[in-house]
Image (cartoon, rainbow, N blue to C red; front, side):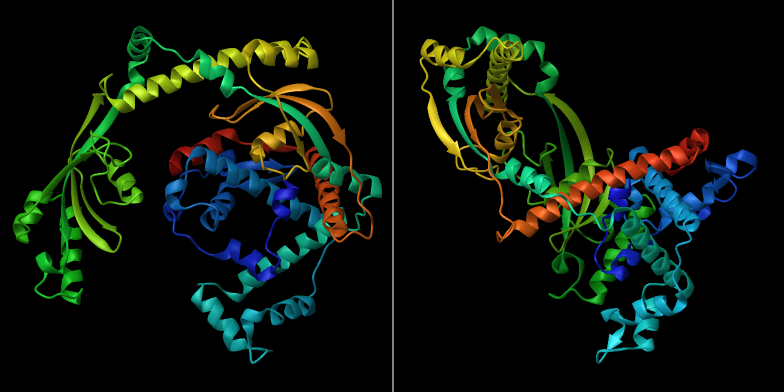
Length: 482
């Protein structure tokens, strides 16, 4: 928690601005929905009761989400952050951390955004507040609170100096050289890929849901200056007509009614899947991916006014059909073969991994496997954890997790790159204090140590304060805001 709260921009103004910018939400009219008795308390920290209104206010001004992102997970995440902020505020108060008005004024006056001709300008300050719909009291309180948090964090983790052995340890983890021998397992798998038509058919029948697609049919009209106004320019008259169409959609009018009213005679029709492709798997519509997503969000007979690539469209969702793809379709067949190949890969790798985990697959077994499967062993030297000449970064990270003289399997998530690897030798490295990048590794070790201190302090706070969350109220907030 503390590590997350600590990650702010270096500018005090930027930090505070995150918490001030107002975002329109549905919270303004919540009224007395949760008021009365314990129903108004969302969490109790020690003897202090935190009201639901305080949490709602926190969400309302949060820059982390938009109004259409208010799902249970987002609300729960915001609540955890809100709880962390409350604990930090209580610690600041208990430790007596304060900031004088003189110090606060000095911070504000040193912000570049409030300067004119390199001097603090009260006018620029007032303009900033007006532009962002803020008042000075709230803004300055936020700045003060943020600086106090910085003082607290420095109190907890400031002054950390990592010892040389930790710096060398972090340096070595990244820069140690590894000599490895490897077998490309794809060369083994390719010999096993010989699927009969019967196997392909059986897979298709047993997994029919994998081969169904939703196809949406829409009717649409591009709205432009030619069909909506007499001129070639986007005039006020054109946008007035756009507004009229928008109002008609709100009133529930469909594309036929609007087309007739504005003499928009040509209505195009197109059918596409969730990726915007036709049944022949071709990209038939000249819409962006975002516009396709916007269309697919809507139900049958929905009429929409959409803007895409600086163009306006009147769109109506005509029908949605769930269609089973034919087994002879190249897309279906490729998908079946790909899934069957991955099944073979998983089965073979499961057998190997089981042997490796039971310590029944060592260097001699590695060599025997190469001979039995008639695949070559290659040798390479990996000069650091950033060396991606042969293996991708994800595979390199997997290799660097294991010690010397171990046989391992590394693979990517899609099972497109799969290797059996023997870590033959590791050469450890250390860094001299006078090296050019010593400070980088010093800071890396310092960050890790500070993070550990924050985690420890986090545990201390959890033990220090008795926290009781009113789950019923929190669930009520989630249900109300969804």
